[in-house]
Amino acid sequence: MTMNSTDQSPKAIIFIGLQASGKSTYYRQHFQEDYVHINLDTLHTRNKETKLMEDCLRQGKSFVVDNTNPTAADRKKYIEAARAKGYVIEGYFFRSIVQACVERNSQRTGKGVCTEPGDCIYLQPVGDAFL
Image 1 (cartoon, rainbow, N blue to C red):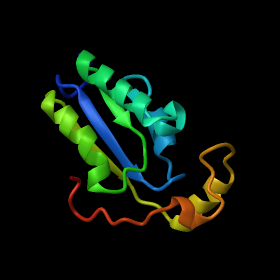
Image 2 (cartoon, helix red, strand yellow):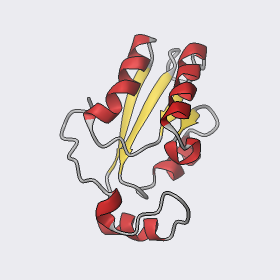
Image 3 (cartoon, rainbow, N blue to C red):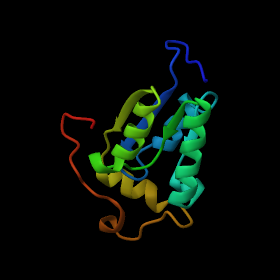
Image 4 (spheres, rainbow, N blue to C red):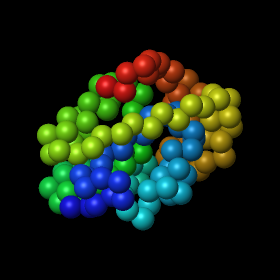
């Protein structure tokens, strides 16, 4: 089981934010050493994502889900699975200026690039509830 400095239970951290809002950078700066990175940009398929999360849950490893996760339904599968294994669950909402995200996203190369903002950025209010 991964031990965190403030808690003996493993953590599941769920990032919520637009593309190019700084989620992956934040992961690298704050979690890379102690948390498994679950990210569709690097894993490429939901099947690989699910397998990695299941491996973490089985081994008691803390992890960060670094995807946009705009709706409660998107977050639900991670939260329910982690809660069932006794994980501490935290959510990080990345408040962003849409135009800044669009500009940063336009500097990217590869599969994750959106040519039109409406193709990638979904403005789904999270409201007051994480779940």
